[in-house]
Image 1 (cartoon, rainbow over the protein chains, first blue to last red):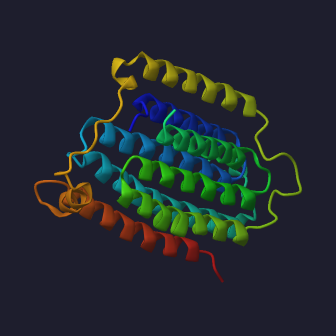
Image 2: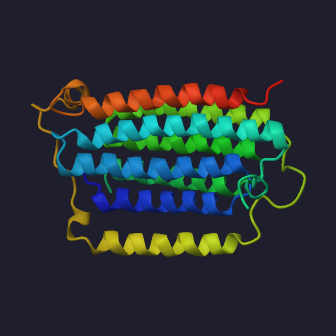
Length: 103
Length: 170
């Protein structure tokens, strides 16, 4: 294991920023959720890298990664259900046009 | 240049290239398929970090469930947005500048840490990480409460998702 810790951290930072750009710049609501998935994966890379490099006997990093994964699955299920429900009623997926709750 | 560095760099190139395609490609179904490629790369990284269980979970849950869910959602809402206008908002350059600024700040902080250059010590042969993870997830003195809360959250989310997706159906 000769890879420095910083390589993993920088890879995760770049992946996070690509996901952030996707969330902020894309119009389509499903594409925004894809960006959120990229950001969650970046966080998980960080968690597992810290677990491996700091203290592999303490399982906190891996347990946290598993819980992030479960929350990501819940988020995608609810998010896509909302998007499909909105699409059925309004026939649009553009996040700017879904403004029922804006006054 | 050792073998694991080469694997890491190949893997990083795959992840970052695919991630750029996810946010830049025009067709949403292609974006969802590029996401599968990103997730595979991350699974290889987990294997490289000797977190074998997470690598398998990444393939089974992320690729097997989440990515397939995305592809289903894209299929159900197809042809939307394909023909009219650009796929990005008109002020996408603000998002790009913001992302680059945050990236610069993060890289500056990471490289400023004296600990960042450290490499990992080998895991001692007496430590069985897979067994430790299994024990940690069910042991009352460790993480059984977060684990159970996560399972209740998942159940609630799935029931909610079924209900929400059913609203408005004739």
